[in-house]
Image 1: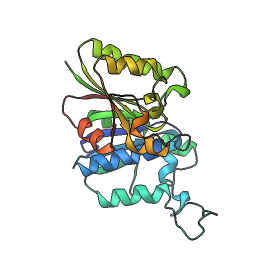
Image 2: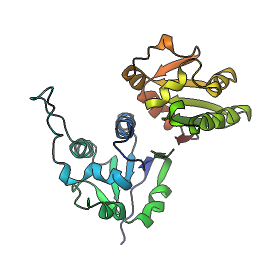
Image 3: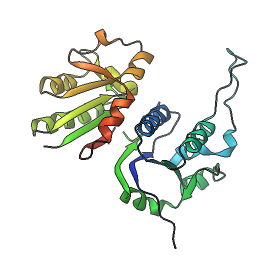
Image 4: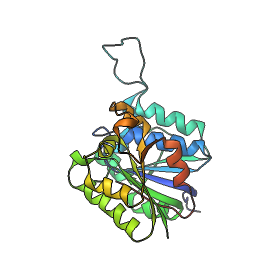
Length: 135
Length: 108
């Protein structure tokens, strides 16, 4: 039987370039707030946002010359920890086409790569959809 | 009447799209819908008096203007520097509103 995405209250689609604006911060803040309310959330990452869960990012950001001993978690680690903390209420999907085009097909195991033509299935099982990063 | 949550993240300096988006919020109000306009990221600058004529119109027409507490603090914008009638709001409140069953939401 073919796999189908589990229903969620909200679908957040990340379309914008993640480091051009505060898109990632806002998306993660909203995701965390929704999870705090007991909601089920799915995130669909497209384009350069597929890099957020790329294994190549490692566990931490480059060291801060102004605060050498402080450790800053990478986006990959933040998302992985969120997924680990909410295994039945948070799902993170990566557009396989966008990831392969950008050389980021090697994703952390907690996320699921999906063909872009399956996106409609995710919309169909979401109570609400928000597309972030489009102006 | 439908409840709407419109999220503006760009602000006036991102170009005319912000004013057009707020214009949509004004039209929804004028059609009798309830609208919350949530300003986040650089969008919070639209709540500075004089920055966005349409945001002022939105408030005058009865819209609820929420300004993201975190984004405003990052830009050193205290509540007293924002349009009278606006209020600071946390992402928790946005989540609550977003989860209301019949609400429609758009992020710009």
